[in-house]
Length: 271
Image (tube, rainbow, N blue to C red; front, side, top):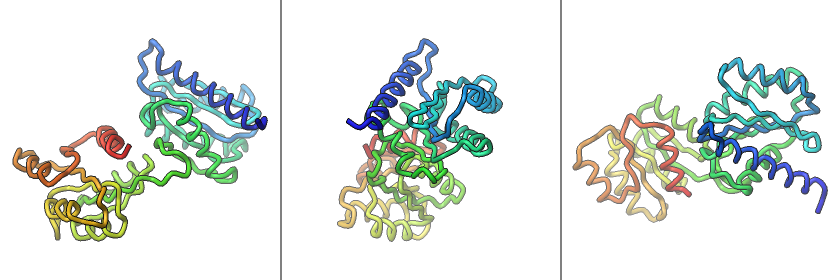
């Protein structure tokens, strides 16, 4: 076995045990944010400066940092932190490393088990994100549980509210989904025929072609035979719910909803 491969395996095993210790800690943390970044040699003083900078964002923040010199890889564990907050802190990490002249490649962020169940295979895919992006690319990759090179699940999202559409487009994109937004039923139907998505996420109250008609067209379509439909709506009448399930929808999410709940339901359907 090549030395570099052995080193990567040892590093992944160490990271697995570190995250596992956080999740099984008596402190009761149910998540652990992780940031990895390719960085030139960092001394203890620089690591301390970085931790101090991150704690300026939250005085109660716990940061566990390690630096693997053989891989030139900085790892930061953030006990109890969500994926979105970990991503936010990664922007600070990137700026710190760039300003100090240490950043030598890309960064990747995850939160376990929000991004994926904690396994050594998942950690291998997570660490591979920085290699896929390339050493000269200083972007921040977000791990969503998909193996490197795997096709991202595609979603056609039909939502007439522009603000909600923009928010979900960005949020689901960060989760690794290939999102195609539409504002009315006809535009959504055209996208479904063109993209052949894995899932359609739609409101019921739509202009041009309403949600019920759209669901019926999807169920009858030969363009996307395995496509699942999830309805998100503020309609609470039992008859509406019954009609949706009669038309074959996979799930219904009532507005207002928690983005975390939405992501969990989509992850279950697209697993």
